[in-house]
Amino acid sequence: MAAHHSLSPFAVTPQEAGHTLAKVLRARLGGPSWTQVRRLITARRVLVNENVCTDDARRLQEGETVTLLDHPRPLPATAHPQRLVLRYWDEHIVVVEKPAGINTVRHPLEQHWSQERRRRSPTLEDLTQWALAGRLRHPWYELPRLRIVHRLDRETSGLLVFARTAEAERALGRQFQLHTVFRRYLAIVVGQVSNQTFRSRLVRDRGDGRRGSTSNPHRGKEAVTHVETIEYLPGSPGYTLLSCRLETGRTHQIRIHLAEAGHPVCGEKVYVRCLDGRLLPDPSNAPRLALHAAELGFLHPATRQPLHWSMPLPTDLARFLERLKCEAFPGRST
Image 1: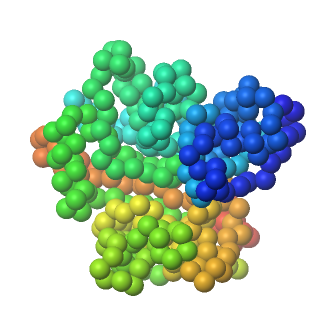
Image 2 (image 1 turned 60 degrees about the horizontal axis):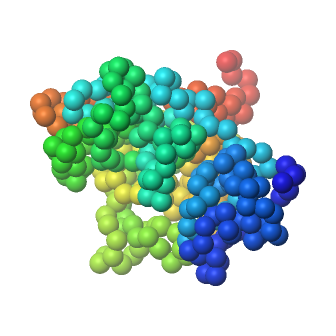
């Protein structure tokens, strides 16, 4: 297939739902060969819901968005087990610094993937297991599987913990359920935001097909985010560097609370509209979602000793913040 072949992003229709990515893409492109379509997919040129999908047999769901890129989407430079930073590990847990641009865990429809396919499109779970195997000088397939106790969004960077035993998984799970795990994020948002607490009940569909808050006290789950201003950068519209502490940990909680307040995280691509359909402006040209899990603390699941880690903004967001500061204060020295 010619490299210049293009296709506008599209939403999966009810008629296309349940069919494989390869079949739907082939039909949309007008019937190229199966080999040509599979090459597009394995070359990392196809996104499903903004994520690279290299599984031609993945069955699509109604409403999912499929995008054909003009050029392959490269793996993040940090998506290599030798470059992954392990902050702590023992026989119970492992704490890692997640780079932006990779999923925490694999999509359920990709669990059957071979090791070769996983290495072409690794998740944080994969990278962590391979990195542990390298440090321990032990075959990865003989290590106990990692157990998921929380997640970070694909474009979010920062600190994350995996459990390595069932007992650790249960103990950490209880701490997350009781909201005793300390989690603080850094976010760069549009506009000026003051110190406050966002408290709402989140549902899968707030009325426009997106996750969001509901006024119905009997629906959804309570979500509480404590926000503190670190620095305000004046201008039009201006930007704020925020510290966001999670009291609860619902899906996309910080992103939803800030967007619903009219201050989306810079680089946001999902929560960009008000309930009435108005578009939330973001002229920042952020390199990606400007959200970073900067602090993580909990009691060790076996010893009960308090553990705590912090991680500064990664290079991409640090440079982005510096650019915004230069725009806000043209005369400042770098």
